[in-house]
Image (cartoon, helix red, strand yellow):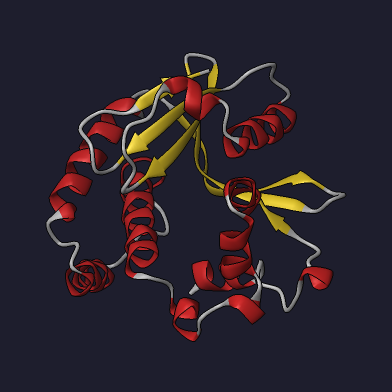
Length: 204
């Protein structure tokens, strides 16, 4: 419900009424303005889109389960009840993604190794990138390990890309700028956590 409300806050009636941009939306607009209009302007949206397609819905469940895993092991607060876990897994089954659940479990195991001896700073952190224009985003996980600030982004249904391609994305650069400013550091390290693959992508 919180995720849906947050997504709805970026939908607008027309271009003239847009007063808040989502980082990933601007990245989308750079690639295809037509797709951006379909995704963020209500006059171009299909009624079915308001419920999200099955991939975005599954991605939301992935993030919820990963966040729950982190909270259980590291924060010990605000985690899902057994009944809520069953409900989330049932939704994945209804969407046809139950086979990916085993990959998600393997990813969470890998994430536990990554976070060993790390200080969790934020989980699902809202970031204000710029005030004018109003550009906002949400980073999946921030942690400090061996004195280094890490940004960890969970990606599902993505084919492996070259590191240089990730480094050049607007999303990564915008988040890096906001995190460096927030923690007063000169650089941050990145991990693209690939939930459907058996390895992750690292860069600075």
